[in-house]
Length: 237
Image 1 (tube, rainbow, N blue to C red):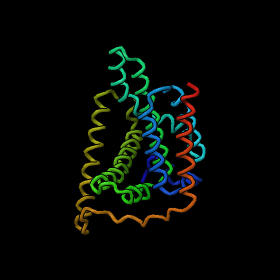
Image 2 (tube, rainbow, N blue to C red):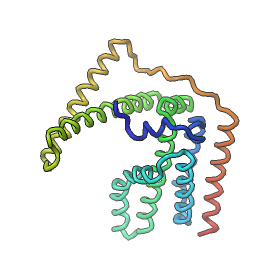
Image 3 (spheres, rainbow, N blue to C red):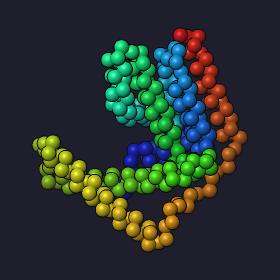
Image 4 (spheres, rainbow, N blue to C red):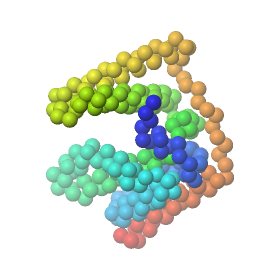
């Protein structure tokens, strides 16, 4: 099976990887709240938080450039609303929307890339996340591997036949349709097999790890650092 990049990153070993998933989730939520409520001196806040997130990527031993590029996937979506604000005569609001969305995506990416998905879902369950949301996330996580595997097989078959070198939009769209059709058929077979084996809408998750003093210290230090950066941005601004 061909693992997606974030799955491979999450299986690394670093001080950030070893911290309890609940501490990292709460820290990410604190970052999102601090970002969303930042109104004044947003340029300074964004710059300081960007530096803090880059330091987090380095501490997690993740490829910084690869993470920065992947976090930019949210920019096309925020650009639509940012353009509307810009045309309405509010360029500051447009830039703030782009900066907040990118930094939020980078923070969530750091969380996912430094935490294995079973541990992340178990931590979300212990923090009181709705079970329906967890089931959707688990199925999405598993079926992403199916789509990735089917795409790799189709790419290998096409390259062996010299395909996709001069393929136009119509050929690419057809290949995409075949990919989702094959992935849907395989996912349906997997679901039927799960039902035949007694699946009742609940995955058995591993037991939650003990929340140790190092995790509490990490949460307090990193959360306090984010708050101090928010205060420092006001003075720099």
